[in-house]
Length: 307
View (cartoon, helix red, strand yellow):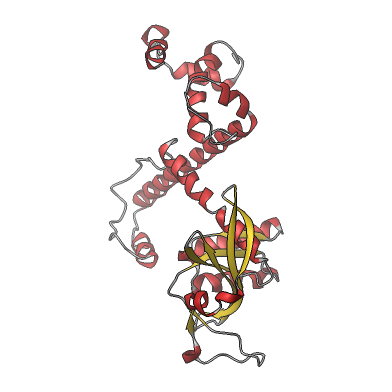
């Protein structure tokens, strides 16, 4: 968890720009906040702003009026209680959430969180469609409406993973080696690292490294392929939506999904391979690896049957 947060901070530092890091409630922890602070100290500025969801059982403290003074541990309160005790302070506003205009009521408060750090966090209590959630941001100046709208973009990460797994099978690698040390199901990173260090044989270490390289390479190329599919969906939206290879009752969006785009690319591959682009190295490589023309299956009948 902290390694992922540090990588996000290093990416922001490399860009030299402020970046919003959208994560789920798992990442609002003391170690994650400590990692952000340590990386900010290295560059002299906190460039990675964590925006996440707080768990409903979290407690916090009001900031003492006296500067630099820590609150008493017993003065903590449940953040969820503010939905009841501060109900008259909520602001109602129309925001764009998931592409739709919705009425939202929210309350923005800066509180001290985590009894070991007493880090000041901006919490936004949100009421929408009979649901109550708490969002958190490490940026104490970010507008609450912006925090709410930004967090809604996090759901796009989940839809990406679904398409990555179901459309491209991006995690369906089968690379392994018997020289890999055996781990317990819920082994900690320290335990796994110790077992890896215990492997002394050069042959075994080389085999393990090559296995991890193969796994990471497979996922990397799948990510590149997903990026190309998304670029095609954005650039050729009208052509893909007019294509009859996949029948849809209605289009939910003007931009086709990754699945629709990938399906159209599969049907278009025959045309690309045999009718045009003869001079492309990629086309020549595909032809060299395909069976003879007589051995290839004719899909035209299947398409006619499905139609």
